[in-house]
Image (cartoon, rainbow, N blue to C red; front, side):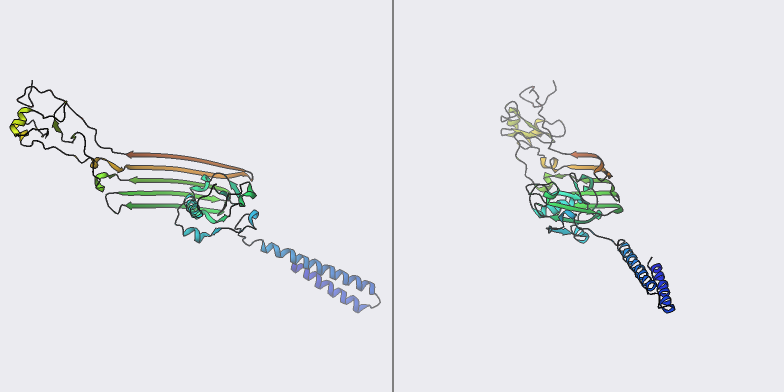
Amino acid sequence: MTITGRSRHRSFQSTAVAVLLASASLPAHAAAAAAAASAIAGDAAASGQAAAPTDRSQQDIIVNAPPLFRDILPERSLDQDAIDSYGASTVDEILGDLQVELGDDAEQPLFIVNGQRVSDLSEIGALPVEVLRNIVVLPRGAALRVGGTGTQRVISITLKRTLRQATLTAAHKISTDGDWNADRGEAMLTRIKGDTRANLTFRMRDESPLLESQRGIIQPAPFFPYAVAGNVIGFPDTRAEIDPALSALAGQPVFVVPLPASAPTLQQLAGVANQQNVTDLGAFRTLRPKTRNYDLNGTFATRLATWLPQVRRFTGTATAAIICGAFPGCCSCFPRPTPSHLFRTA
C-alpha cells in the first residue's frame, strides 16, 4: 500500500507541474491539482501508519499479572529460573514450599490460573514444574477484586501455552544408621495445547522394614518367660517350684527351666535349673513397616466455553504394608502324673 501510494503521488505531482508550465491562466485548475496531490499524500501517509501496527502485533507480549492487579505491587514474583531453584518436581510441591515461606494465614490463598479463578488446583497440581511460566504472589486484600475476602492472598499462575513432555525419575534413600532403605520411581506424560491440558502419572514406592532390635531398643521384662524355644514353669501358681523331685535333684527350688529340643529327663533339667530361654522381641517388632505403594492418576482439563471449564480425573492406588508387633504368647498346661517325674506318658 505504501509503495502504491507514493507512485500515485509522484505521478500526480508531475501532472500538476506540467499544467502550471503550460498555462498560467488557469489558476483554478492548478489549485485543484495541488489539493488533489495533498489528499493523495495524506492517504499514503495514513496507509503507512496503518501498516505499522500490523507488524508490531506479531511481537510476543508477556503478561505477568491479570489486568485486575496492575496497580498492586506483588509480594513475590517467580520467573522460570526462580521456579527451578526450588528443586520441586510438581506444581503441588512448589506451591507447598511457597506457602510455607509465606507463613500461616487464616485463610487459604485464592488461586488464579491463566487469568481464570480456580477453586480446585487438582487439575494442575500433578503437572510438572516445567509447565510453569511464572508465579506471582499478591498481598492480602487483593482477593477482594475477584470475589475473595480481605484477608486472602492471591497466587497467580501462568502456564505455558504449548508443552509436550515425558519425565522419568528414580531415587534411592538409605539411613545413615544403616538397616533401612527406600526406592521411589515416577513416570509422567504431559501435554498442553492452549486451554487443553492432559497429564498421566504413575508412582511407585518401596520401603524396607526397620526393627526395634536394629536401633538397640531395650525390651521390657515380660511377666511370663515367653520365648520362641519355650520355658517350663509351675502352674497355676507360676511362682511356685515346678516339681519337688526336680528341686531335690537340683539341690535348690526350681521355678523355671528352658525347654530343650527333645524330651528331657529330670537329670537333664536339673543341669539347667532356673535358667530360661530368651527371645529378643525387638527382632520381631517394627519401628517402620515394610511397605509398597503404587499410585496411578490422570487429569484432563479443557474449556468448552470461556465460562465453562471441563475437568476429568481418575485415580488408582494400591498399598501393601507388613507391620510386626511381636509373637503371640502361648501357655500349655500339662497335669503332673506323679511327684517323681515331670514328664511321663500315661
